[in-house]
Length: 115
Image (cartoon, rainbow, N blue to C red; front, side, top):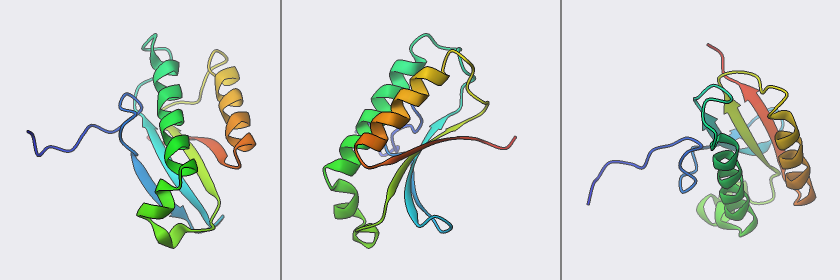
């Protein structure tokens, strides 16, 4: 068995890439990292969907507050950090993800990483 930590990023839905508190909004942010350009992998949106579903399950099953009791009662936002702005092909998927998260009481945002 390896002592190496599992890889982070949207290609691994088993790992929460980063959990942080946005001090301005007082939201707990579950950050997903996408290091690849958009459209580089035909499985990319499917991988992001799996990652989103994993994060939703983690937050909605109360695992987040079990692991981080200091975040009890705070709003939660899933955030996809990308290396480039999504294109027209990705926007409908990301809008649907945002709408679904909102229906579950969670926020969703896309951020572009500074170069």
